Image (cartoon, rainbow, N blue to C red; front, side):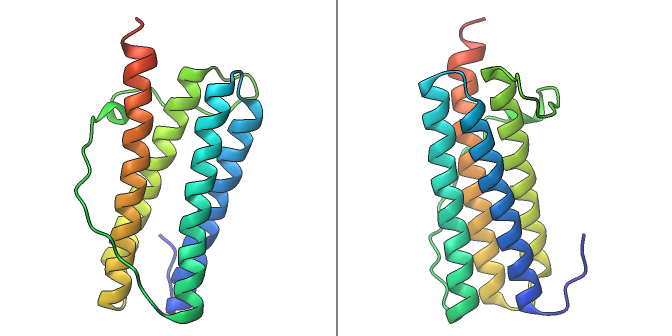
Length: 151
């Protein structure tokens, strides 16, 4: 993982990661082959934008708003084959790729929390990790409902 020298370095890295997630879900929404898929990916664009806004607010004001809650994990992302993005992805591959991205984001924020230079930042990153875990769960539930149950 990248070496961070300041809190701003950590926040900038996290903000850039959120922008990458926004761009990723925008691309999936544009490539979606159904209105349902488009709506799902657009909802994730909105959520990732909220994460980015939250990080920007923390960077600007130094204030932290933390909401803790437990998140279930279906572990579907642990057992599906890795997928690379392509222009002609179907819904199943889009869900798998989204699960993988959310799992990676969860690991990123967990690692950032473990390396945070202050308790406030640790709690912030733990909260963001939990949010990413919720996103992964939503994709796992969609995968369970639309892919596993149909087969």
